[in-house]
Length: 97
Image (cartoon, rainbow, N blue to C red; front, side, top):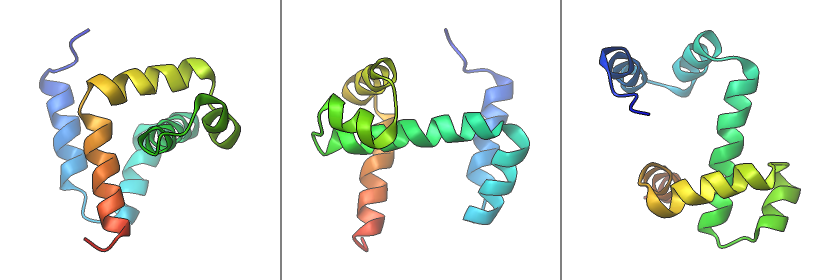
């Protein structure tokens, strides 16, 4: 399913326009349900653990994600670019780079 369209272009531009964590929280709270926000943060945590070569069992225990979710994130992590890009940038930020 292709989701690239005028509306999603505007959504991406909206995220890029945010200047702080506080602004991002405010926007997320308006645009997403709490469950959607928590689901996205869980998937990012799964991707971070996959980048550290953690096994599915440990990831499931720590994140409470289902194996189906872990598998889907793993597929995207292995064959996509978004998770790797963000995970590497977050690691660099934590390391002061």
